[in-house]
Length: 168
Image (cartoon, rainbow, N blue to C red):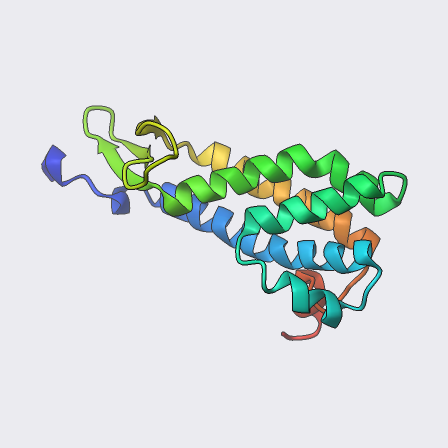
């Protein structure tokens, strides 16, 4: 295969870790919904009527973190504050890989993440080498946070653990 034909299929580790991070964030959103309901002290169905109309994961997380800051002495508020930086970093990385473009460094056979090439107002275009271990670490951080938070909110009908146990 010629150098100019290098494709992402030659790096399934990248495809798997990008997909893994995107899946981890999707599952984590359900945990965030449970946190939202708990912090509001409302049944899930009522909290869901609000939460599901917030169409941006960063906005959803920001609202939950703001609610946690109002309740720092509660176990859930404290746990969210503890995990906030890692959750936020994982969400930023998810947005970068979900909305970025992909290129290839043919000399080093590396996959590049190309950012801000198709948008205005997000800063100058930039590229960076996409490292599977970094994506895996972010996915693990979300998983760790989800376990800690789900242990505090219980198995609401929105958490992945509840859905897995109950077949949905």
